Length: 211
Image (cartoon, rainbow, N blue to C red; front, top):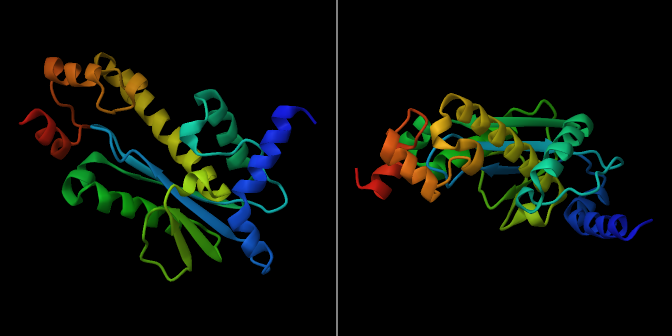
C-alpha cells in the first residue's frame, strides 16, 4: 500500500466514525444530505441525499470543496454506481427570491430526502434542521466529518456545476463556467455591461447593485 492510499484509508476511517456508531447497532441505511449554491448571484441551490453501502466504501470521498474538479467527477460516477439509493433536488432562483435562500436550501434538503425510494434509519445533515419523522443529526461542517454527507456534497456540487456550464453555453459573456454564478468581479462587470438574466437571483442583486 502506497503512502497516498494509506492516507486515504486513514481519512476513510475518520470519515466513517459516525456511520460506525449505527453499524454497531445493526443500522445500515444511513443517509447524508448536503447542498451547494447558497451564495451565488445566479442559478439554483442543489441538494443531494445519499445512502452508501457499508461493505463497498469509496476511497477519496471528502468535502467536495477540498477535491479537484476532475476527482469530484470521477467520485460522482462511483457514488452513483455504488449507492444504495440517492436523490437530487434543484430549487431554482425564482423560488429562492420568493421564499429566501435559507428556506429554499431547507426545501432542497427535504425534497432530496423525500426523493429516496429507500427509507433511511438515520440521516446526517450539514448544519440543517429538517421537518421529518426520520431520526436525524445536524452537524456543523458535516461534509468534512461524515462520509455520507461528503458523498452527498459531491453529488450536489457536480450536478450544479454541470448546470452552470450549460448556462455558460447559453450566456457565454457571463462566464458561468468559471465562477459558477458566484459574485466575482468578472460576474459583477458582466451584469453591469450585459444586464440581469432570468437565472439571476433578483433579491441578491438588489442588495449588491442597489437596484
